[in-house]
Image (cartoon, rainbow, N blue to C red; front, side, top):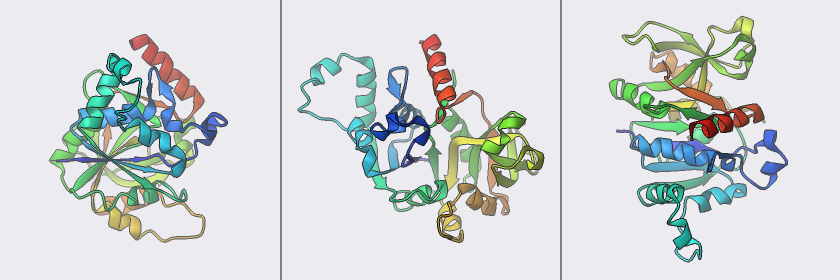
Length: 273
């Protein structure tokens, strides 16, 4: 059973400056709720109750957001708000840990910070920049369903992207078939290739189920000054062992790490509400 979700949220949010000089990017609102709320809610509704935030001292507002203050004079008023009631339920029935990532050394390094928290065989990772929507089952729930059938594998969510966008993503090279037309064995992963060099148009998005084995493969990545430690490098090592699967998920994804994606997500949610 997958009990832990890791949220790498220590980044600077430079594409939203000057707003993110004071407010974490993860607190940007989609409708009435911030991005980080949606991520935790997605995990919670999928049965995950342990949340590990890889963060920084500049983002204390996120820690406060997922805390209760019995002395808050607004508490009685808040208790009549459905969003607050839902958030309180998550807070009271979940665990939260906050680990500082002192310097930004890539997604692989951020995930490695969770090594002492993750005890189970597989765990989830949600990048809240990727706002995902599904009318039936969330993307992380879809990945969990696959992970149950492949308990020693990593499962990454992928979607088809346009040729002009390929250079922005990690791209998977498909290996052998599976019994599911939307599930692929991964032969290799390429970080942000040129379109002409890309092995496919299937891009990895911010939802993962990773095996505990990933930590060893991250630790084995050579360290160089100022170089980032990419999770795709570690996943490539596991792909060589036929231990990585890619799921073409059912649902919508908005890149809220960019202003156009953030705006599109808000327009979409406004229409849905």
